Every structure is written in C-alpha cells, then in structure tokens.
Image (cartoon, rainbow, N blue to C red; front, side, top):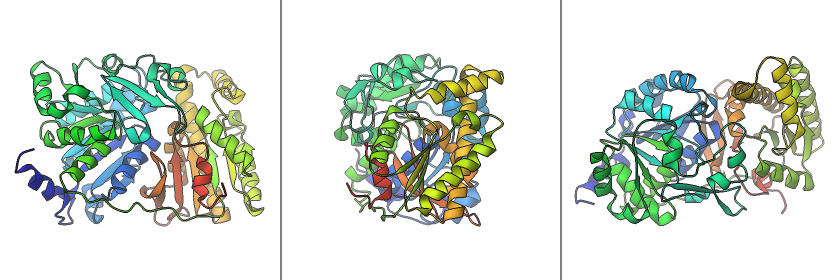
Length: 471
C-alpha cells in the first residue's frame, strides 16, 4: 500500500463532519435476515449503520448522526428477474444520490439463486447500468459465518455445529425448495444468470490482487470473484475492494465484503477495535418461526426440551381465507402462555419434511398457484400473518423482546409489525443480531427483535435470545 493510501482511508474513517458524505457504504440485502447481517458486521466494528425498509432520502440520512452505513432490507431473493429489476432500479438510483464510495448488492452467503428466481446476475446488470463501474468485485466467503470460497467453489456449514459441505452436497442448500444449489463453482453458477465474463482472484493471488484484477479486466472480465477461506484473507480482500473503489464502486456478494473492509481498515490503523455490547437478559420472549430449515427444527426441539411453550400453527389456513381466524387463535394461545410465565414459539414448519409444507402447496394449487409463484405467495402470506401475530403479542403483553425465523418471511414480518428502520443492539448468532425497532408512534417502537435466518445459529439459539436462560 502506498504512502498516501492510509490518509485517504483516514479522511473517511477518522475525520467526521456529520454530513451525508461521511457514508462509507450503502447496500441492498436480497432478503431481510441477510440485511441485518451487514448491519451487524458494520455496527459492531464501531461504524453505526441503519437499516431501512424503504430507500431513505438524502434528507433522512442527513438527519441521522454518525451514520457510516445505510441499508435497505429487500426480498429479491424470492423474485423473478423482471420483478427484481423493477424493485432494484429505484433503490440503486436512490443510493446514487447518497454518494457513498461503495454500493453493495448483498446476497445470501450461500448464494442461493437461479436464472428464474433470485437472479444475482440480473441484479448485477441493473447495478451496472445505474452505477457504471468498470468491474464488479464479488465476495462470498465469510469465515465468521462458516462460509468459504476456495478456488472459486463455495463451501458452507449447516448451522454453527455442523461439518463443512461443498455447496452442491450441502444437506439443505442442495435441496432448497426454490433454488437448489447443484453447482458449487460460483463462476459456473453465476454464469447461468449473466453473460458478463467472471474472473477469479484465487488464494494464491490474494497478495497481489491489484495486478490480478488488472489482468482480468484486460482479458475482458467484468466480474471479479475473490477467494476467502480464513480470517487472514480478509484484510487482503478488503484492501483490494477499498483501493479499487473508484472503478469497482458497485460490488456484490455476502457480508464477507464488509468483514473484509473492516479487517483492512483495522490493519492500516484507521479503525480501532471496539468493545462489542452484550444483550441484557429478559425473562420471556415470543417467537414467530417461519423457517422450515433442519437447523431451525433442531433449535425448536432444544427449546421445547428446555420448557419453551411451542404452538403449531395451521399453515394452510394462513394462505387461505381462514387466515384471520388462525391468527386470532395463535395470538390468544401465545398471550395465555406468556401470562403463565412461559416463553413461547409459534411455528409454521418444523423441518423440511413437515407435512404442513405439502398441505400449503396443495391449498395454493387449488387456488391456481403452483411452482415458484406458490412459493413466493407462501412467503408473503405466512410472513405477513406472523408479523401481525408478533405485533399483537407485543401490544397485548408489553414484551420488549421477540424473534422471528426465516429469510423469506422476515421482510413481511417486519413490514406487518410496522417497522420503519432498525439498528443493531448486540450479537446473538453470527448474521442475526438483536435489533432495536425505529418506528416513532408505533407500539413496537423501541422493541427488540431478532431476525434469524433458517441456517443460522447453534442448537441453543433461543436460549441465547432470552440470555438469562439456564444451560
């Protein structure tokens, strides 16, 4: 790194004039839980980040103090390419007005996507058209999340307690109901979604990444994927992204990009280590679980063994005309459990083999919906119902901490609860921080919420949410 580079970083990191141009990063998350993941990686590094549900205006950002990152929680992972294009263009144009040095299209760290649903290729094409970079950095590996990219292939654990799997042999992602990952080579997988040439900076080339990027660009590559396997790789990847921000200011991939940037800023002494806050314990929590992941199923089993009250929601009613009756019934049952001193979890699925999944799809088929359309409707209807349930439980019980599970449903949960924006409060599990709701005038304003992805957390995750729960 040249002599002048640390001073450039210092202008952005150390000196703060309290205006919009002090933003380091704006980002759009392709699902809700992934959006909170970026907020966590920035906030707990000492860089205040606020996550909105709608694109903020320049005036809104200017009104916030000490904000270094601005995010928009999205849902393009479950959208068709044309829908995603219509969703993303106004967001990217709003980001252009914010004028942060980096704009990030944040994907799930397992990169679940396809040409038909959740196309990362289409998202990159839209971002390219709006922001006009000369190349797009692509980072997926995030060691803290147990996600690794080695020689262009993606590997991941199945929860924090499992071994590591190549993605096309992953017990969950290889059989994902919407976007099964049958190819671990990111270049081949993404190559099905875009015509742009994809190059790789592999593990052996990270120490001379700038020269490798120049070589790839000269060869016509417009996307540059970075291997990331260990914590020691992060500062090298972060330096390549930050030093190349003039030409590669639009980037894509997981929160590994933010972890890499933070590691680089720390390595050059421009960002101090900070004490990470811990969550205060609470006596009870309420959870609305929309995940069908085996990881979440194991966490539900653990919670039930430890005395949480579990309520099985009739999911088929939430996607049919009986939705309100089932919502009312679930709220009543949860409020009663809370009045008896229990923590309570209402769940719409308990693992990928739960028979309720097939029942929901049958009901939607009878409505004329099938395939991807049925799955998208499922996420919206179930997520909205769970959001109404959690919002009412908070209002009726005064609980100050709740949680929800499921990347596809979480956006609709937050929307239905009346959330305007969020800030991270404390870590819970990697990628799923405890958040504080910003929603002035709402019953949920100031409430603490954890949005947990299906694959996230150890088996005792729900005990962590309570914090005071005995082991």
